[in-house]
Length: 305
Image 1 (tube, rainbow, N blue to C red):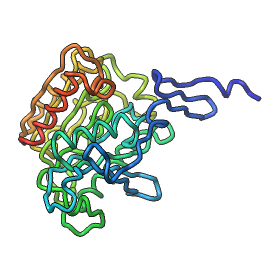
Image 2 (cartoon, rainbow, N blue to C red; image 1 turned 180 degrees about the vertical axis):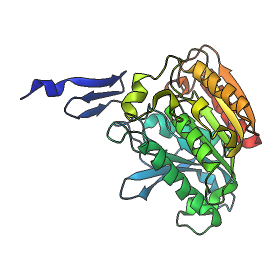
Image 3 (cartoon, one colour; image 1 turned 90 degrees about the vertical axis):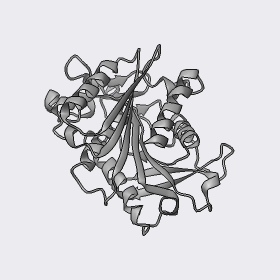
């Protein structure tokens, strides 16, 4: 047996390990999947839907259980999970629980998108999967498509996109694309970027090169906001950018904010920062005071936009 095949060619913290023979081991978001539940004790019901059978692109839909059969329509939040484009899913405990908390706090219907991951599916697969999923959600706006929870309980006049880390990057790309392409007539009200990933301040980082082997480097509009000609035409009217003081991506989040302000985009942008916290702290310590405060900030943005 060729022992060189067991050589590790990529490792990202304690989250993923990739071997020379192509094997991929993920240590986050794989063994802690939470099953969907119609009558869970937290007051939020969930169901899983397969959007594209050929690729496996799917989503988890969240709805306050009290809304079922009520005739009430709620704001719609579409969420893109983080994980460096390599790990995570809507079904793992961290993201299932977090989106559940968002649904409870903001009183919304939420759709959490499951896109395909690198390295098996390198960039731009995650963006294309997410756009297909977003268009599928938007197709329910006329009340004619099959998913009843979206058709009956989602208010398509109040649609928001959100994501954390790499998911925030994807959420930005979706809003940018919605600004220049028709999203089934749906207009986005707001975009929430939590600890967004737009590379590092020291050139093109190895993580991005790994997930996007065909990248053009600093000219890559998905990596560098300053290279994105779509900034001025983002397809939303409001934006919330959330940063963390001790996050290594903080400076790039500030760079995104300044780039947006200079772009000529006509919407309103708010930026908030949590002190003494690191990257996506709220996922790993969700009951802390700072995590609860961040959750309320997101809910307030959605409810008052």
